Length: 257
Image (tube, rainbow, N blue to C red):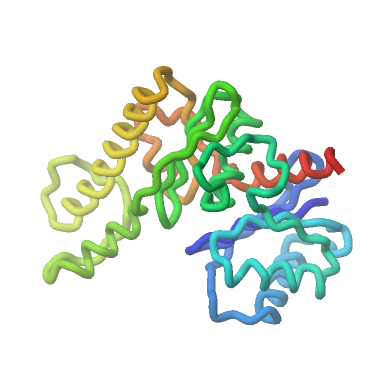
């Protein structure tokens, strides 16, 4: 079995593949203050909770946008659990040509998303990832990673609104009953929700305009299901897209070796 791990700024998502299927997964908060030993205990507990024997997992592949935690995870997986670990970067054989000016600048999660989307849904395709930041990644008809956009995530926007305004409350992010809201809380929710839906669809239109053709659009990340309800263009939501991308990259690397 293969362990796949996506280390993000807010959450760490892990999944275990048996063959080409995720058989179990878990999510924990990203915490830079934890030690190797504490993360080891976290993972040992999760393996036990999920009924997975550690010695049944021989290899792992990691995507990380949090450099301090990359080495922490590689170290405890290899030293404590004896799991051979690959860290995703642009120097590996990825199955996609990266046309960024400097490929090393592309977040490994964005690469994994592009590879996973292309493998599962074909090309051309746009991936919208609703994480701490909202990212848009574009794969061409030829299967090349063209680049994309990065904008602030909806939760960052909500937090900034709360911090920078004296009378507006902190709110939960959810779809409001009406666009024209009758309370301050629902007014904020309407602005955030419909503002993001509009942003997403407009950016997709601008990408299509620049490409000269339309594409499929797949979404992932914590708020993907909510935003996709009113998006005109998001056709598919896959909460584990990054992990699937890691799986397909792993298969590519092993095929070459």
